[in-house]
Amino acid sequence: MKKYIDSIKKYVSKLNKYWVAIIFFIAITFVFGNYTIFHRIKYNNEISSLREEIKEYRDQNKANSDQIEALHNDNEVLEKYAREELLMVKPNEEVFIINE
Image (cartoon, rainbow, N blue to C red; front, side, top):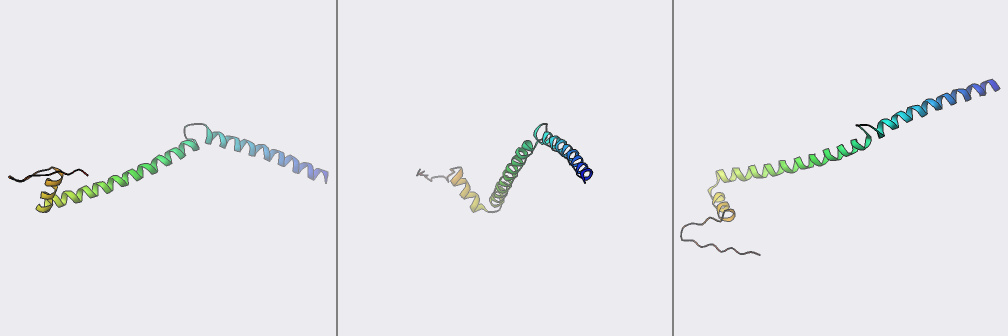
């Protein structure tokens, strides 16, 4: 019986040494170096913010494309844009700008 307990203790002590070594190398890999867990989290946050920015630019691009299409196809929209944004007037017309 004592031999059996001694062999179990010997096996467990070796197993613990291996586990300590494995955990130590994994910890070094994740904490030190160029591809640490901290860098990974930082890069994931940066990627998600860039994806949101891309979505905003695509939405803005779609709105601008729709506005350009409307300006090319409809003279009333073109005239409204010219009067409101560019402050253009017809001859003998007066414009009053009211700031709120």
